[in-house]
Length: 118
Length: 112
Image (cartoon, rainbow over all chains, first blue to last red):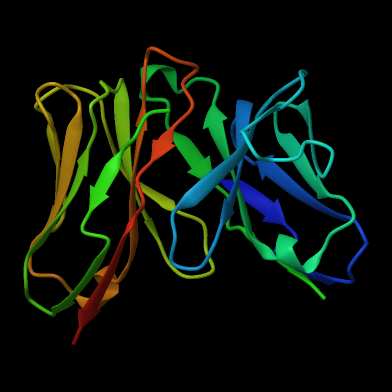
């Protein structure tokens, strides 16, 4: 149980194009999903918190117009990197919190998406 | 912003040695999770602790939650090369919006 998928697992795009990353909870419902960015050998940097049916909450310093997040259902959230540039190249990871997790507040992570912008 | 101090940041040991990773904070957490991540993959949940003083064991891994729920430790006995990876702790505070705070991570390499 508690499986989260992410698609695509890697993507290479040209500078200026937009890239959409999908995050799905496969066997549970997630009212909250998180989007992280990770640099090599570093911890996770929270970009935004996505709640189903409402606007995402972005962390300080994260451009909401550049990183568009949509959480249209209890099992799907998408991150769109608009007008991507080489500095956006990174490892993007999503996580989902089970609606029924209660006080443990556990989150389960997707396998990540490696984005390379040429 | 809550801070979760994780140490050490890097650890390189020989197979068979023991090690301990620490996560400390001045904040009280409702729960704390430990994850292990391998290169190019997402973090995998190892354990969740919620009760002060709680000790959980997962084979050669022992997790402890401090009595005041402000700190936690992960102890690995007789480390093996398969334990190599990035270990992350994450705490969730009851006083906020339940957004997890991650430690900086501990990069562990176990040499055969």
